[in-house]
Length: 330
Image 1 (spheres, rainbow, N blue to C red):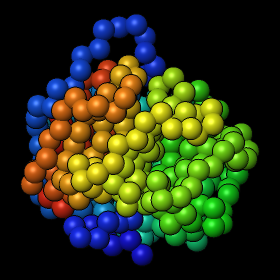
Image 2: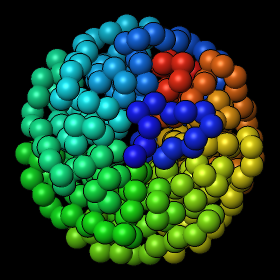
Image 3: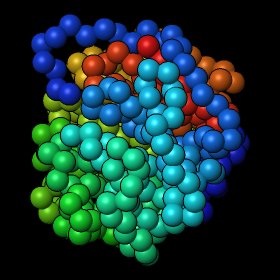
């Protein structure tokens, strides 16, 4: 089983509108740290850029924060969110979806006050790890690491649309929805695999597996749905792939990406942000070729594990698991 909190020596497992975008340059706006964010694991930006949703694995907590200064809007904690790991914002900004690894749950919450809309729990979501919203807000896709499963659910009530499980999704822990709504992409830790599935029925489009994707973890689509970027924490690698057939565009690997965990695409398609929790690093890369724009590393990002872009591309929010910190970078 994945450790509750990462041990440093054990790798664990919006569209471009024609506006002029400001490149995120890597400066700190604010940083919050402490027991309230104990084992912070996932972050998500609200579509209106006003709020950040945070889930904390050790604190068993879900929190909404003001982007302006990191102050708290509301916070929920307790066994219902035991080992909260993944969080996603609905496209209309009215809801957040949360998955909890130990509680084996998927929950939809109102962003206004954190009240519950619906909650699903049980063995079908054993080790629920990551979650993604469809661009139309009608569905949520869930990856469950221990259940080796991918499921599409109706956002309205949590009812099942389809579910796939088995060795092909062994250790499923990363999931992303294409912005055009046609596909779901999955990264599977134990299977060392990346798979593209039709969102309509879960049928396979293509699948890649092998040592290049050892410990496949974070996955994200480009805003135009033409590319997928993948972080593989055992292979210490970041790779850009063509959505059409899974072929490689470029791949970067080495100690700079030691424990590469999560990835995020900038809204203008020009940049990819990566966090690496063994390297304690946050990096901005050119999407065209993977070259470095800037890189931050050190104890402030000890156990960097999650990252999200603001919808205007001006800010990046980073969660660092070991130092129990949430940071906004511009």
